[in-house]
Length: 360
Ligand code: COI
Image (spheres, rainbow, N blue to C red):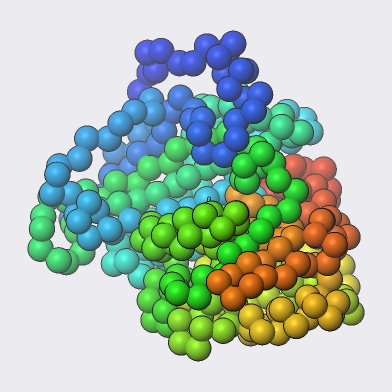
């Protein structure tokens, strides 16, 4: 593939406007000035890598993605480092997962170095959009979709890969310290053999109706159970989950083929193990969860993901009732693990795993 071409921006955001936008960006509402695009077509492979201004994409109304949802994405962040530079966290892991998603949706593989280079190009160009360390981070959203105009049901022959960036603070509205979950008993997120273990837009579309149901009950996130027995905890609408027991064990549902293998999940398993916790990737049922919360055998519980980082879960509700976790606020284990993780991400702690990649 040839080198990235850069298209000049005609009207970038002024310094004053950018600074105002960075003051309280929320999540996913504010976007930087530029984007990366790379085209793929059968026969030619990947071509035309471009760093250009962020703008709407013109699509043929027959574009396959609009009909059969051939779309995948990733989420990772860029962090302001103590020396003013910018780093990102395990982008190679996102590149690998992106290709797993591509495989499942019969889409082309993207060379890992092209994936990481796309992110680097965008972050270097938009580095002024990376918030200061105490204000947040720059959320990066690589995605790929089928843009071939064709209505037959088969893998498309042309695709567009893009990366956009959004300065973000906390994922949950109002920077909530702890969230309430809604257990969906009527809907499932994923089935064995389905697409639950990959990051395709369709998984998130299917989570929206149960998420709405939960919000109507005053909850922040929906939690899904397995599709077969409807009792094993799988994951939330947009993040993984971990349980901290009184004896220090940490339980998290195993990667059974219908759970997204989160990069944060994987990193926390390593960090928690190194901190002396026994981490068990094993099935945990909704009945055990409630009984352990009521007996005090369960001390803490938290959501984890790139967007959520670590977000404690204070309360659980469902159509059958509800229960609270611990004292309903951040527990010690969640606090320490989060500190440990973000200190690595922001370049404030020794990176003995080699997880931090300097981008700028
Ligand atoms: C992430 O944590 O990056 C996610 O993809 C979750 C959500 C924003 C969809």
